[in-house]
Length: 594
Image (cartoon, rainbow, N blue to C red):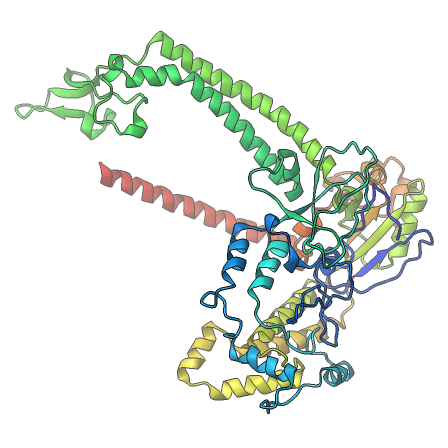
């Protein structure tokens, strides 16, 4: 599919399990209905999965130092330039040459046993696993146990773990060239930075956040000290606005503190309270007064003063004394300085609001995401499953608006949750068995029976807290049965995600179809500028800009409104109770100090 500079492929494609996802390709614009997984499409691209034969597609070197990548242009993460590594990784790689820190021979029994099987040593009498034959048998089975036919054969590697941490967990960026085409770096090099041609691009950004596990171009870690402020929008609009606000507030309070220096000098000097003796160092310069004296007060009440600042004589209770401050803090100069500080804060906050609004626009324009090209329809007709129907409607009624991708979301949250539960428990089983163990149903059932047979009373109690293979297998069986039942249901359409070719088309559609929740609820057709063209099957659509795909809770996309309100109410009540408890604790501590 050809892409333009102002175009985004929809990550909403394949966003939820068992929903229709269609991407309309250029120039034929032929739609192909595809099945979807339970994760956003861009995540599927970032983490290559294993083939049925068990070979890895990821460019992870084999034990002999050769690269097992199927593509010579992929970058070897183990050959990163040391200058671009974190200090922890450099230190770990340095210490790995010492046996006391990292001994490759001291791997666990399961990994060493599997390595002996792979090397076909004479002393190895363990049963061999014909991976190709086993994969064929699994494919022939009616129900496949797991996307992987055998457990991962790789032994633990500290170098790979650090490379995974830096390339999949930490944020990385690609230096933006002046072209949308990025030159791949041939594998085997020392991963030097790729160069890009120039075409006088006016974009102010110099970094572009790389996708997780980027393997086509060389990426670098963001520096906590030298990352430009304008690049903070790579983490999202909220993060960029947060640091913009933080930086501006720091400047406001710096000016306020500099203006307050004369007051600080006065309060800590000899003219105010004789240099504030017995005052802690971090409080010197504040308005604390240590020059006090007891004076009689005829009309003073005990309730008006703290107990340590009011007293009476031992001879009579009628005469009351209060502790008076003899410091002169209400000077004209101090008052004018305080007014100046207040003016700086007020004016600074007003200016900050304008700066934040401007920064919000700049961050949004710098970050081109699927959200900028997409809309979501919250109240589609329940039987409008055909993506081609939506594409043709937008094209015919919005002056040829080009729909690049259409994702039909169906009301199948229970199915998606069951799929996720099954996948999670199978993943836990894979982590508990020996590398190379077949992951078909019969083998897992045999391992579960053997583990349960060996358990004593204590092991059974521990299994209630830390589940083992039998517990995970039980959840898999329940989830599988649930999936088989739910997969036979006919699911209604609940959401429709439309991704257009350009931002202008998205804005034009939003402007024409955004009529407010009240008009949508009442199906008020008169609010539409052109009811004949803007009604979909006689329905007023509830159209809005979607959230970023990474922020959508796909498992709970169709949660009922009543359930959401209950959860929000419960959260609010818990927060109120926590605030009350904390206030009571603070009050008790303050009383104890007195």
